[in-house]
Image (cartoon, rainbow, N blue to C red; front, side, top):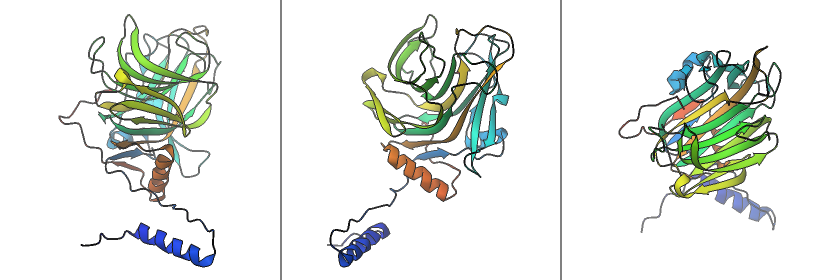
Length: 317
């Protein structure tokens, strides 16, 4: 019988074990190797020179009016920029900036969407949330998010799918509490509002950098914050249709701030985003993959195949 070939990783581990035994009893060998990169992988660390380069990476920047947000407000291409990371020399981050004076015409929001081809697998992103505006008075019901979504063709569309992370530093959705929402959706009606989903809330401030992760299989969605599992959603709330990977920064209706006056300006930064198709990876495994990609100077890669037949990407929800 032919013996299978031995990998270099296995040889290295065997050599380490032999050296350990030869040196002293009780030595422990730690396997520090990184698992092979997923065959179908999407990764972007947003090292673009300027926002106009995002299209080459498969991104759409929303520019226009529509749901969600304040009626009469708009999503502006100028709300997406690339900036140098002050904490990591040489690193760049994508910055979404939204501002409002409490009126629709005085509101500009930000949204960014990738191609519609993501379903089962592992989703992750490293994001900087902000509790307070960069300028102006605090208190607007701002929504800072990372999500995946399929279009809503009509009210209670059975093919609708959505996975949300939403940070509400000033509250919203009927509560003034600061919290991070993790939501997996079955379907929804926009007007009048009626939602069918499963939601988890993490209360308290999430100001600063955090890594959010979702493991999605045919039967469940598992959510992690900074490596800690916080929720499991299953049943009808598991996505069934290919989705876009999206980020947005917008303002909910309501809130205690008066209209008018100087605009309040909020930022949300994104360091990187990651998706491994049809693979359930732990937070530690995703971190290892990202470290390896960056060590190999891979700024972005996309080997996730398009949906068959191809689906038109949309950036309007």
